[in-house]
Image (cartoon, rainbow, N blue to C red; front, side, top):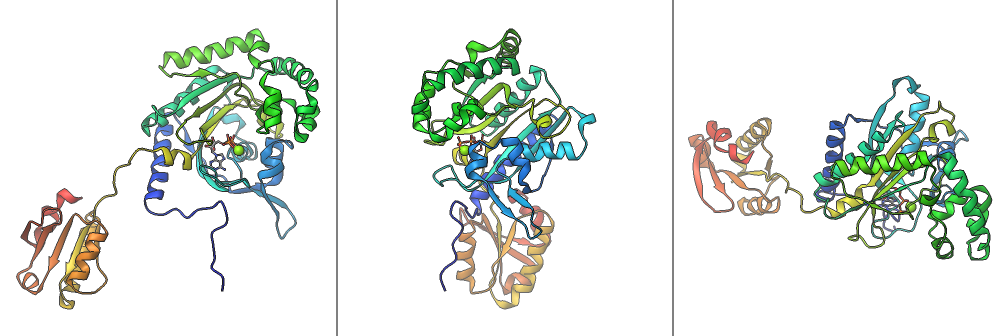
Length: 414
Ligand code: ATP
Ligand code: MG
């Protein structure tokens, strides 16, 4: 029988890996809660249409990266490649339009069929937030401040850089689109086949293309910034001033774009040099047209998502796991008492472990393996006298402690 392997691009997370992931998620969740975000858990799969409509037929995600399949009932469903579409769908199907502003935090696995490499998996995890119903730049400032706060709490403030750009309002984008189409049409032969197709349908998408020919063609293109109208310029200035007032450093990057029609105004990313090619750890932007495009009531929105794997890789050492107490019966006769003491310690909030057999030497080895801080040793003398030998496994010092006093005596190991 051939050995079963994990699917390419997927990973089993164990122990310390999981602790790092949880640390990222829990930190994000707690900080987001301080900003008024409540958690939303949407299904891991949705009708394919949910992603097609939001991500657009021409995006890389929709054209290449989705895990789409037909159910037994004949419906097309897709494993979610990102979180915003599901939240927007929940907002619409739950009829939440009267309850805005609404602030959502989410976390969980995402699925994209792309080439696995460092920092890029086929199943990966994201944390993210969405703020629905606020058109003012104050929302942009708050959402970015929240991201910066989480990264600071993860002790990554010195590792990442905030890049910022504005895509302007609809009017600015329409003007810019025409300029861009004119510019790129003159360089059509440099463009990839995909992008030649996008020239009519969704030219802004070409700006985010990763194709080398597209990148070269786009390199000299006029920038968004030069085509922002007065209102868009004011909006962008307010966002920048707000961030500066909060002491949040940023760099304006005119090449930072989101190529989908419903994106507008603020686009931002936190990037790092510490991860090689996969340098974006958190990306977001304003998407005022999204909810309406999905068939819901016109509702402004802004949000971001961050890759948990990438953040976990960057994390400095996190606090080590709590070291357990090893309870060690010397012979079979002491097992019952040892089990009783272990149970009492666990009830009292200690992390306690008892070996599953073997002699004293084997059990001591086990204590070492689980990195126990202290051993509670029970031999026949101890059991007769109602005491236990408590050995500090760092120093080797040991004392006899009445069993009734153990919980008090061990308090420092809780
Ligand atoms: P990239 O340019 O790296 O492909 P993206 O633009 O596709 O990123 P987004 O859709 O903006 O990424 O997702 C937000 C974040 O999710 C990314 O910044 C990254 O940290 C993480 N991410 C995206 N795709 C993957 C993946 N396949 N594996 C691990 N993390 C990912
Ligand atoms: Mg991608």
